[in-house]
Image 1 (tube, rainbow, N blue to C red):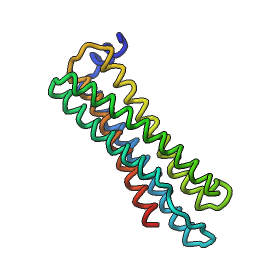
Image 2: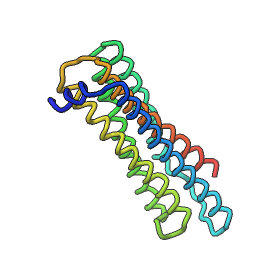
Image 3: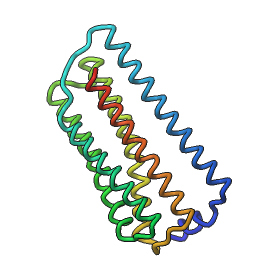
Image 4: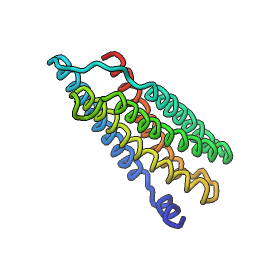
Length: 193
């Protein structure tokens, strides 16, 4: 708890801008990675020997979970900024629960693919799907870890919407919405392919 208070006091305006810029650079790098992978997917599919299969319905259930998680993250952030402690805490808790549910549905989706006979070594089409969804799940896992830290702060420290804490929650919020948008992009891409 003392560590979180110390970090809160040491956030100077110039450092805040550097931290936000660092997050944006990281998100741009992640976006370029997924753009490169989806481009490689298109090129490889055009080369032939591509196994066609339907996406498991669990991918759509996981999409609902990540959308709900983003909704509750945004609600929590707005409540935090408006000094509404109960809404802030319940929102971040629900964002965390739905974020974890997203990951659970991803694992269930992979099991459904495996049960259809779509494995990493069957055809490159399956490998691409596992790679895209797996890499995204790793980034979501990082976001869930950040939400868990935010959740610990919310429930262990006195409620105080200081500029430093608002800033940190905003970083978590931005990253979370970013991984949400990446998933929507990937899902639409996979449906259209």
